[in-house]
Image (cartoon, rainbow, N blue to C red; front, side, top):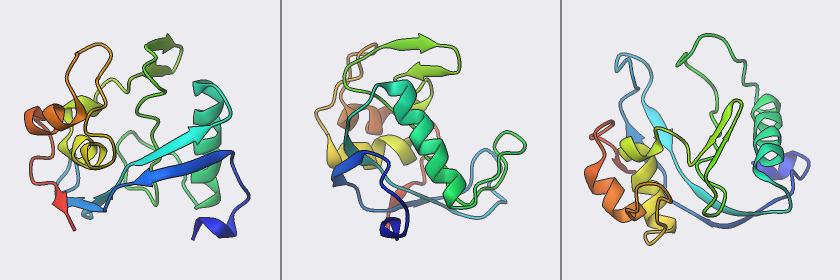
Length: 138
């Protein structure tokens, strides 16, 4: 499907299986499908995020209210081992470690990735996550 869109300078090295979970924070919404891709980028984190947002727009994403239903949601979880607090961009993603629907797929592609602030691996964080505990591979 991505082949229909112009390149955004992100080479996919590995990707997880799809994981399903109840919508969050409102579980009455449509079920989520989540996955993680490990990519190689030719740009810094701000530019990578800009490219992800551009890709979202190509898929019809319209940003409205926070946590509103959406066609696609691409997040930058980390950029190497970098810790960054720059305006709207904080890396690692400030809540990813709490979410099993993020850490589970991340643990598939990079189980030994270590959170630079918390010191725990993706595999450990998947076990300690407190949100989206129903998340499981499809």
